[in-house]
Length: 67
Image (cartoon, rainbow, N blue to C red; front, side, top):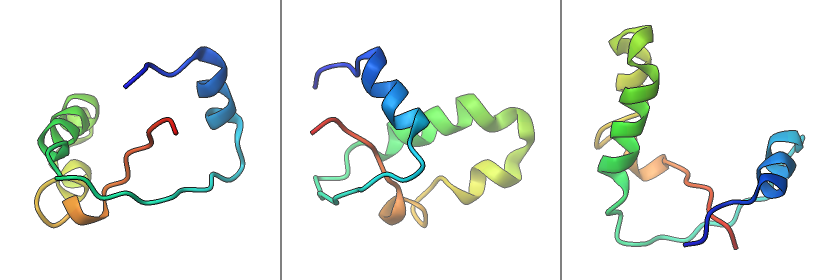
């Protein structure tokens, strides 16, 4: 996968709404996503992070990828 350009990231960041289309792959990204959440948000305590990580959260996790 190619990295996002600064312009693309700016467009996403400035958007009021994003149109998303789902695609289900093998789900192998969940552990990496969980680790990223913990690294970024653990400083707020276990409550917020525990609600968006783990097996219960995996089916509803959204990953934004370039088309």
